[in-house]
Length: 497
Image (cartoon, rainbow, N blue to C red; front, side, top):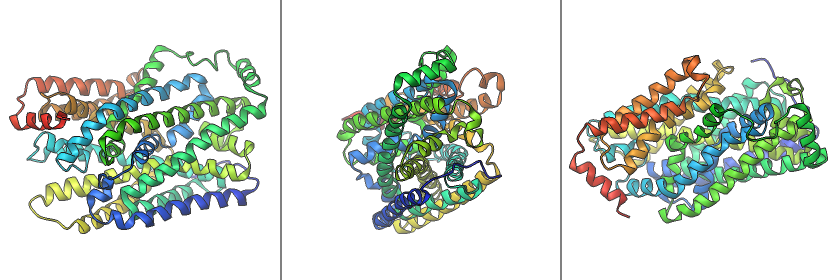
């Protein structure tokens, strides 16, 4: 890809030093976590269910945000104003409920039946002896996950290009190599610990940058006056149509269906600590979302024309504003925060995709009648992570210009298929395996069809009809199929506490 217009970085030595220091910390955590994660696939994929409540809280929220928050929401707020705030409200509210209620049931059941992955949960919940349910889930994961990871690599390439003046192609490759190193070394523990550190980078950058920029501009009043002159209603959060409002709020429906978030709930050492995690996670979500929207608003005051942004791309606003407002060392922190968002999502998704191949296909389907060495399974898991990185990297390099749309599409596909079926599995005793399969397939196909039909896509975000129809399909098919006694016993075991 042609090199993007780049930001001229004064004091680039400071920026590079700060950023390299950040990367050294990540690789160090990977090395530190390697021994623990090599003990078995439970340790490699969910930290042996020994993760601290703070780590779970912060890694859950930052792994769900990705570069979409720092580059996408800031660019959205720049383009359409304060109404972009509603794109964050849905997931903040939904994830609070997940922490408070959904997560405890999932954690209790998965510990009781030694479930390491989300397909493990479904297979045990519905006594999936044939492996058909597990296989469908793995296919859905891989369909959406490869594109999702690719989009994070492309976002990393864009951040490298706009911040350090290298080509986007080289930036994509460098992003993939960095993520690969500590993920392969340290597994889930490394991913969760780095996510926790990255959460602090992200909140510092997202909160302090808009405050400093607004102060330098002359205060909120000056900024509001400039933005109002530019466009009436620009700073009014309610200045959007009903359809757009529903679409924005509906983004939150994806959270219960994204397995890289669900694995955090499964990993906590004590389910009683999830209420603490709910408070911390929600606070972090609110501050990060508010900061992202403020950056878009103040950025529009500083750069009123999109042609003033590198590559005329609104997603380059965040690093540009930081470069013009902050000391080079702090600018290095901002660059680190962009990569924090990218890495915290990509590494988690790689582990989920790898676990679906090693645990759900190889261990539970191909070798289901054999006793396999845990260390060998960890080795295979690391090999699969490498393979998935290569596939995602190739896809990202070939489709650099179109891959970024896959973020919300993959979020929708996973949310519409796994979200309603997992909720029904956790909360309705009469849910059946046939009902879950119907819900998974309905959510997946409705999302794909809706996205590729322009008249549908233009009127509503595909996650909303996909989730709704997936929920309905699960209910209606479960109503007309029988629930075996063993499945009801599993449900009773899950809700006992």
